Amino acid sequence: MNIYKTNFPTEQEGKDYLLSIGVLVENESEIVFAKDTAAVVYIGKVVKIPATYDKEGNIITPAVYYPGYAIDVMSSLNLDFGAFMVYPIEAAHSFYGYPRNAEVPPTKEIEILDIEPKIIKE
Image (cartoon, rainbow, N blue to C red; front, side, top):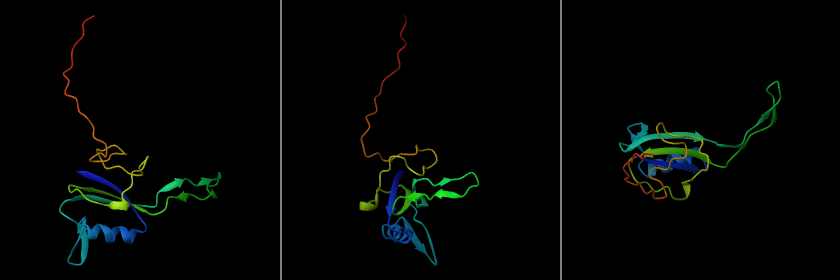
């Protein structure tokens, strides 16, 4: 499975792009996942600076949001999101069973060593 974290100018532009690359397909009168799409998560606006509140719960300082509309995709296909692909330091969402900042496949190659454990006697 491949995980893609994306950011589009608007929700509609994101949905249109997902349709154009085959993540979503039109089936009769509804839009559904393509057979190779495991999940699409419409995250929306991501908070950059949280709001602050007084003791009564009134907003003192409103939240500040990153620009755009975030959508995460899990697919078995190798997809090209071009300029819409993002690599957040602290992701707003994670897919079950994957670390929050997982990139699957990762952008960096990881070397896996085949080492047998050894018991060291003192």
